[in-house]
Amino acid sequence: MLNALPKKMLRLIMAGTLVILSMGGTSVAARMQTDQEAQNTRPTESASEVLTVAPGNGAMYTSIQAAIDGATIRIAPGIYTESIIINKAVTLMGAGWNETTIASTGTAAEQYRKLKTAMDVRLTRVTSVEQGQAIQAELKAKVDLIEDQQALLVSHANGVIIRNLTISSPGAPLERQSIPTPQNLSADTQQTLRDIYEDARKLAQAPDHRDQAIAKYRAVLEIHQSNERVFEAALRELARCYEDAGLTEEHIRFFMTLAYQRQGQERQKALGEIFNRFGRKQPELVQKIVAEIRGEPDQEARARPPVPSQDLVQGILQREDTALRETSLAKLRGMLARASATEQKQAGLVTLRMSLDAKFDRTPFLSLVLPLLKSDDDQVRTLALTCIPALNATAENLAQVMPLVQDKSPEVRSQVGGVLKTLAQGKHPDQVIPALTTLLKDSDPKVVERTLRSMWGLQHTSPELDARLIQLSRDPQYQGTAVYYCLSTMRTKSVPVCKRLIEVMQESSSKRDDRARSAWGLTYGVVEDAKPYVEAGMLTALPEETDEDARKTGFRALRLAATEKSRPFLNSVLASDMESEEYKQLAREILQDLDQRVQ
Image (tube, rainbow, N blue to C red):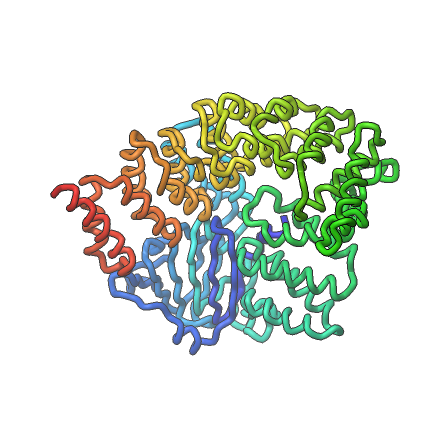
């Protein structure tokens, strides 16, 4: 993956540095600060939140690890020889980069023992084999990040802040003269990703600096893919730079490689926009690069991808000459006729797809395309299937699409779920639900992934389909997709589905977006029998939740399911000095609902 963090990123050598680490939340950003800047940006601290660490007996703690439970930990001057594991949001505040040093003598084996102990505790609480396997997979992923003699490991914690201290490299001498100063560090290390991005934008305005801009944009993407807002903005700007520089093949190759590395991840809007441009402008080059990335042999022997008739597309899309449009449509119908050659049909279907924005009678085309679902050519069947929903097909055509659930081509099977759902329009569950269940058990991961994505807002379900979706949501390969597109968007959520969404909210291994999405899913469509589970789940999850989106949405879910059992928690929110006014207002609204029910 391009966003895989180098292991050495966790062994930071810094002077007067602000580091915000988000392992498990997936972002790492570093910015150099002077001592004065650090003073000006210091967070508000209350006496009850600040712990002190110093050598000997002069402070509350003599080791940093022992004080990790604090919100802010002030560290006196000295050298602290420790292997520290941080698993919660804390602020480490040293006395100065040349005064406070964390030096490690710990080994990978020692860190592994600590990590495994924590995982063993979690394993005692699992309720299924799949959940246990997910924890074991998480353990393996975290062990991969551990190197010998690592000074600091941030494990599954968001919002960790480190200021005014030095973290020494393993084996590096501890003499003060060996500690680097800010001037020794590279310019990019001293910048936030936003700074790098802004530099790239400025460079991109000058033709002579486009190569530098491309390098900067790629640095933003490769270091910080999980910061989606900056990531997607940088994607679009990078694409524009490539286009302005005329680097077409390099442009396509980079973005196609990035897409394969990120497949299955959420929020692909910018990549989708870029690929649409590729497909329209350079279809043959795209096909060539895709084949190379997949490592497919004998590229020269492969059939060329179908090329649309641009003349017909333009003739159909233009609005000034009605006669030209009708003539173009007639020629297109001829390309799709039964007597046409396979290559003509392929080109005709691609042309039809590109012409669907125009207003014309779809009915004659539906009668031509439906028979092509039985073509001997895989590509013809795939293209025909993707055209069906836009040709005024109805539930009456379900019987013609249904056999493709068992089609020999995974490309065909991967398109079937979306077409069935569109044609059924929330009806005919006796046909659609078994077909979707079969597709979700397909041996090809691409078929499963695309079927999941097609199921947004599913109106009907069954115990078997629910069970399969829940099973997929426990698989790291599909969890985000199953939660985002399926479980959270079901119009009616059964008790098992609600329980699974609650589990996702409560699991410390869940991604932040998955927790927020699960909470959102519990704000509607919850069956009455599931509401007690939702209430209990929110009362457990909300006190520990740190993500703003997940927490706010969790309060909304609690409001729909709250009973008198929620009153103590809501009162504790009102009484807490740590809760913001926004959360207190949410608690008041739920309490008002409870009071009205009592009256």
